Length: 150
Image 1 (cartoon, helix red, strand yellow):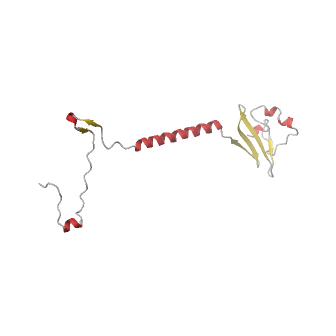
Image 2 (tube, rainbow, N blue to C red):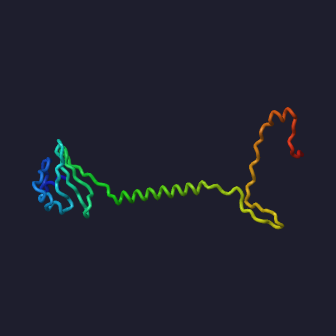
């Protein structure tokens, strides 16, 4: 990556020289995909070289502490597309959960049968009551259930 600073070969890494005038900074280096070298203020000397593609900033080379690192910038179009995709997936998941939680009707279709009788086709048979022990008062009174015993 040092070839960007010195295309003829590797050079010792150090802070680049500051441009003398603003016209020098906007010279031929600003027209290409790699922008001018910008010196960053601070006690450790650092430099920044912006990188553009089609007029948009896509990243920057950072020269600090004798190392050159490339820092990519997030593309706003991709971030927006990812957010829209995540929102779509979340809405679809919520819709499927709501539809899946709907209970079927307690009774099927209610129609009139022959002679005016009501027909409940598809009705579920109610669950039988579990066999519970007799309450204490029924035992004391020797009460019996009102069902026909065979």
